[in-house]
Length: 431
Image (cartoon, rainbow, N blue to C red; front, side):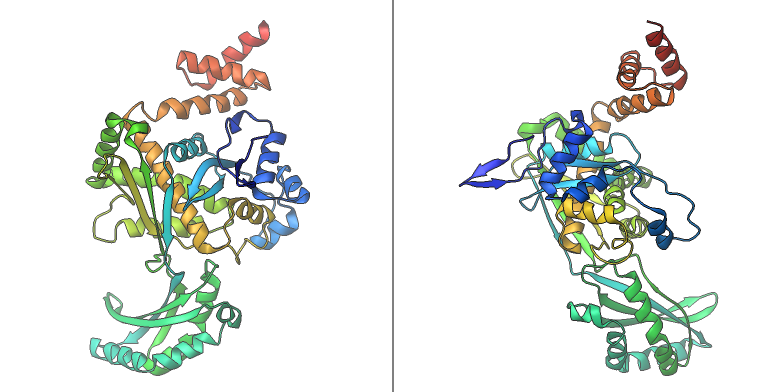
């Protein structure tokens, strides 16, 4: 067990757990139990590898016949706004968790802030023969927006009780091949929920009133995943004494490549989403919505670009920042049904959607820095293939210590092929 830091007689938790990857399953669970203050029942649930039963899964989606497990790992060393954080990752790709942990270890700490949780609901109104009639319909809607907002407010008393609810009504007329359309935006404060259900219901409830006022016909009534009013920003500093000038210059060159080439920017952002998606999945959030919003945000100025920015600060350190929409919640949706997602949130210590969003943004920045550092210096394949060698060894039939022996041989030879893994395993067993 690690020794917690002691200050004035108080025991402070730390996310820095040396050689976590070398610990047994029991030791890892013990560390996480202590850090996350988990109960015996919660810890036991994490120790089960098939912890989503049929009845629960069948309530979450249709036609359930099984579950598809993903490894659940922990990224260490994160300090967000001065708070020690262990971050759960759910994904299948090697090196992502290790890269985030190492990046956070090198960073002098992350600072983050999130805007208010305002989501946009869109109502499409059609049936206008001329632009003048569409504009007149929109004008009528705006003249009665107070009553429309009151109608939306009456839909979700629970959300209003917790300080959320409709905040603003906006609208525009667009020209399409199908004719002129009015698009109404209902801005809703969804508090600590992702908000899709609440926003969609409000849009559906106000649509008859919008039809009556405008004289048109409503079609789509749906949330937008481009959550431009619900963004998160994070910053990290990697000191020159830690990285060295050569590495800093290499990372800056790699960043400029992404900032000026959309092909590179796409892969640059994929590396960011490696970590972001993994945390979203682990905490029961809609990673597809986050992906869609992030990539749309990256192209908001007309050209697709990187979601991060890097520069040297006044002291010559590397300063990295990230900004993107982050519609995540700590309540509602599948979170209430998925016990492991609730435990993951408890480990992370996220008490609100804002806290979760800030931690996720820091993860995205950390994974991006790690990728740029590796790509611009030693190359991405070195660490990635080292971990992939274990998968090749297991696929070849290696068990227990054989896996590490086969992986070590593959790494030494620099040959990462299933056929060679089988040959090495055969040699080991023959001895």
